[in-house]
Length: 135
Image (cartoon, rainbow, N blue to C red; front, top):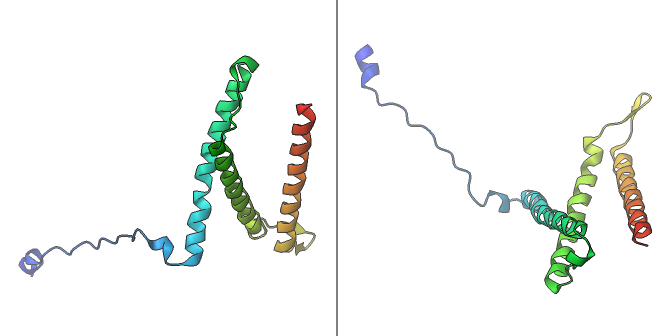
């Protein structure tokens, strides 16, 4: 009996490979990958902002802001990506955040709307501070 077991070929290992286009087959997967990609140009723009802050810290003699058409177009595209990323995240916040009020759970739609309201409030405050300090 042991001779039979030794004579058997070893079982082949199953090598499963994920297809490269797995995310294009389903609309939800596609938009998920697009959403995750939007963080990359945003990160590049933020690194550029850090360089600009460093250059501005060197004094007005060493600083000239970028005003090229390419920079304006890139910044506009990144703004759209940031808005898409933020809206999709805040839309899910009601499913992620659970708030208990007394013995009931606050509805997820109310949580999402509160998050959008806080986003708008934070945008107004940041805009006010930037305008105030620019004077």
